[in-house]
Length: 184
Image (cartoon, rainbow, N blue to C red; front, side, top):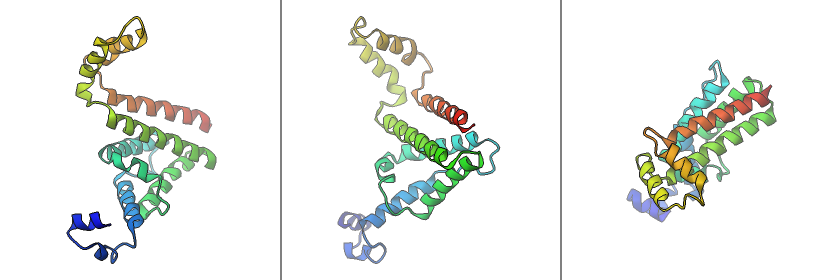
């Protein structure tokens, strides 16, 4: 609380006129992150399009705020934006015919994928560096010992136009197709 107060240029005790404790600040920060993620369109004709748009928005927001990944699921007092967000996602799935347990499975799977992809992406070299990094790895790689890695680097990662960020849409489509198959 002292560091927050110092950053704001006020005394720590004055913060307590606005928030009861550090947890309330963290709850508010998480709620602000959820408020930035677009809600799925409940009127979308295809539930997959609504969830795909929401997943893309969540990825974009969380890519800017990857520090929030661990914090988002740790909060015990969700704010109104967080509650509205979860309710909207579940609503799209329920209207699409998902049972309650299957809707929960879907949300868990999709959110785990988004969080994992953002975490991985935030730790990978920038996309324009991927060919250089892949080349450096290939230069030191005993190709006879790691033939599959050499093949992927040579025939995929170092190809002109390769963009590892496009893997997100591919994986998300697989998840949505799998959920569609289980929904029926």
